[in-house]
Length: 357
Image (cartoon, rainbow, N blue to C red; front, side, top):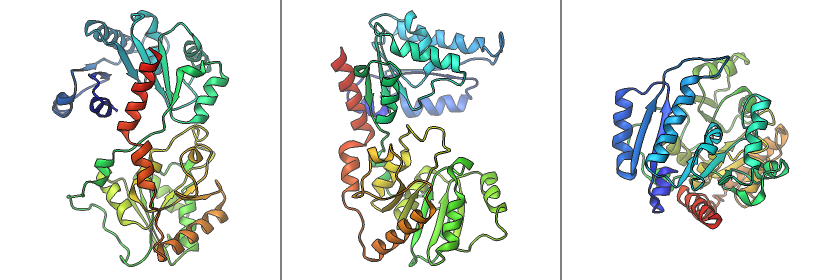
C-alpha cells in the first residue's frame, strides 16, 4: 500500500517497530524503500514484561511513534494496528487516523475488544475505517460504528509483479506430463482449511493431476499420515517463492480456492488468493462463501457450495470440460484492472479520506 499511495502522489513516511531488527534487514529495508519514502524510521524495543501480560516497552515504542508523528507534522496516519487507537487522544485533533481492519474481533480478550469497539464508535474522533468486505462493514455498523466512517475495499494485486516473466530457475519441477490437465491449489494447509479434500479429489479423479503449493513440512506430513498411500497424481510442493507461485498459476489449467466454515474469519475475509487467481486468466473452482460472492460471479469462476464435496467434484469436472474446449475466462483480467489493483485501492482510500475533510 505504501507504493500505491506514493504512485497516487501522496508523500509517505514509514514508522515501524519490532523486538529486534538485524543491521542487514535495516539496510535492505532502507535501500528498497528510501526512494519512495519522505521519512523512514525503524524502531526497536526490548522485550520486558511488566504487570501481568502488559509489555511496558511495547507501550514505549508506541510513544516513539507518536513523537515521530508530532515532529514531522504528519497530517494523516494509516495503520493496521488496533493498539494505536489507544493513543488517539494524545494526537493533535487535526491528525486523521485511518485504520484498516481485516477481522471483526479487534483483540483477543473480550474486554479489550469492547474497549476498541467503543473507540471506533466515538463520533468526535478524527477517524476513518477501511474494511475488506461488505459483511465486515455491516458487522461494525450493527455494532454502532457510524456508517459514513467506514469504506469497503477488498484486497488487491500487483498486476506488474504477476505479469513479469519469471527469470529464475524453478525450485519445484512439474512431476506430471505437460500435456495432462493440471489443477493447482496455492495457499495454507492449516487444519481449518480441510485440505484433505484435495487428496480425496485426487483419489476420485485419477485422470487429473493436482499440485499443492504452500504449507510447512509438518503440515504436509500431517496430511500424508492420514493415508496409507498418497495418490500418484497429487504432489505437495511446500512453500515456494512468491514469484514461483505466480509462475505455477500461469502454467496450470485449473485453480482451486478452498476454505471452510472453521476458518475464524471466513464470514468477513477477502482472500488475496482470489485476486491472484483472477489475474492468471485460468479457470477457477471456488467455494462460494458470502464475501467471495461480493467479488466473483459465475462469469468469473465455477462457484461451488462451501464444504460440499460432491459439488466440488462436479465443479472440477466442469472445469476440465472447459479446459478441453479451450473455454477460459476473458473478463477476469479486466475485472482486476478496473477494480482490484493496489493503486486503485489506494486512490479510493485517498478519495474517501479527502471527502471526509
